Each structure stands twice: as structure tokens, then as C-alpha cells.
Length: 274
Image (cartoon, rainbow, N blue to C red; front, side, top):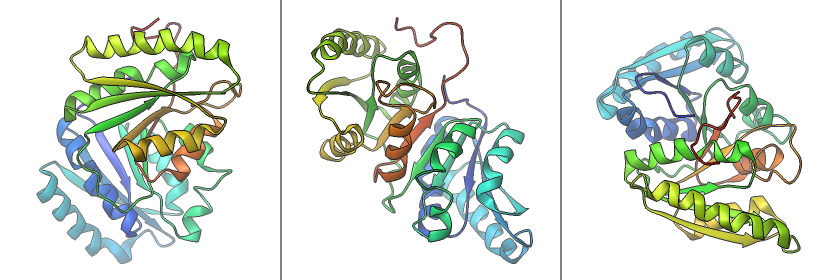
């Protein structure tokens, strides 16, 4: 699955610092994918009290990004409206700041973040840091042996080529699971070769740990990663490390932006790696 070009990037706005940083975070990706930026605000009365603010924000965004920009005002809870509106507009990407306010946590909480990501009709970049990482030098790609996990390889290569970034493959395995480690290492080398054959710099690392989320976020911070790309899917076994609950926790707690991709429905794997 690749991020569609000539599409739209939807950015929910509540005027928190995180949501405003999310706009800036989208600039380069919007440019590379030739995408329109759509800013969305909602409130109990339809957002009309912020009409002037949104008009000014659209003008600023269009000027700084160089991309077509528009806004929409909706009535209701913005977090209930994101996924349906993204589907209606056939957006190629959602970029959302994870506000630290209580109201946002009631939505992007331990029990609800997975639901939000699963219902999204397109890839989602979540951000909880106020640091602007508009540039992207290193992309962290957690991977396991599941078919869903390898689907993200094409998207990661796409983004890496846009930014001329290095892909850092990492896989976490239980210290007591020697069989998994033995199966994993040849596969990591295969993925690494696949990426390098496409002209992208790549490294790989295996980490023995019983805490997948902590290991991934720690590696991202210790290796100057600007983006984590993961798959998000429910209903899989605990052995599928980078989907389901672990993916939710990474998106929820990482200070590094996280791109979550919903596995596509397919009969065969499309990444080219088998």
C-alpha cells in the first residue's frame, strides 16, 4: 500500500499546540505527494466562532506549504467526525496531533486509540510531541514475520525516497525464543536487500526484549529517527508484535511521529517480498 499522490491530507484542528505543529509536519509530505491540505475544525455550534481564525490559518498554511489549502467547519465532536469525513473526501492521509488535554485523552485513550486507527480509511500520522520534524532523515520500520507487517515496506520506501532518508529496520523478539530469532534474521536480510535494490540506504537490528513498545520507542530516540511506520490490525495473536495492542501503545506513547497503516484486503502480498 502506497500513500496516494494528488490526493488530500486531512488535519483536525482544535488550536492546541500539537494540532498546529501537525500542520507544519504535513508541508513536505503534501509537496512530495502533490496533495491538497484540508484543515478541519468542529464544535457544538458548527465552529463558526473560529471562522476568521480558520481563514487566517488556511492563508498561512497555503503560503508556507505552497500547496492548495482549504478548511471545513463541522458541528459535533471533531474526533467522532474525523474518520467519516476522511472517507467522504477520499483522503490519502490524516495527520493528527495528540493533545494532552483531558478531552482528547478521552478519545485517544488506552481503549479508544485502536478503534480510531482501525476505522481510519487511510494511513494516519499521530504526533504527541510539539517538536517540528518536518524533515525526515531516518525512518524506523518495526517488522515481524507476519504478512501484514511486510505490507508497509512499499510505503516506507516511498517516503524514504521523498526525503532521501535511511530506513532502519528493527525487530523485537523474546530473549527465550531462539526459533523465532533464527527465522527472523534471514528475513530481515531479505527485506534489507529488497530496500537497497531500490536505491534506499538501509540498516537492520534485532533486539531481544520482552517489552516491544519500550524497545521500539527507545531505539527510535537513540538512533535519531524522525518517523516510525507500523501496521495496525486487531484480532491477531500476541506473536504479531507490531499490530493490534502494541501498535496502539506505540502510537499513543511515542514522542516520535508514528505513521499507522491499515493492512489492505488482498489475496496475495503486494510488497514484492515473499
